[in-house]
Length: 162
Image (cartoon, rainbow, N blue to C red):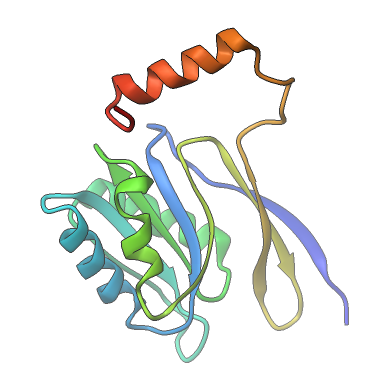
């Protein structure tokens, strides 16, 4: 059995935060939608899910039409069984990640980021699957004391630490 490897970049023109994961059932889209609106009332998001059996459609939902379109476009480009993509606006993955992970169908989270993302996809005669992700860029060094101070200041400025 042969396998080829492709790298599929996630198109994210506005550098929105996104969550890329894997689940196992068609009701994923509705359950993720409910989890997000429950975790953050008024949340703006788009979800797409790659169905892996029967008609193999990209299923979609969300509260922002532009983000739904972006999610489904990227999901179709991936075409990887049972993968889901969530694009978020005006909130961070940290605000919803635990709610997403608690959805019974969710098997794993590959990344939650606003960085550029490339998805490493394995392709066989049967289909396509996510092998891993490239999230952002390679490390360039070890933080200095000045970098530690900047990190601490940033977390306090954006309200994640007191």
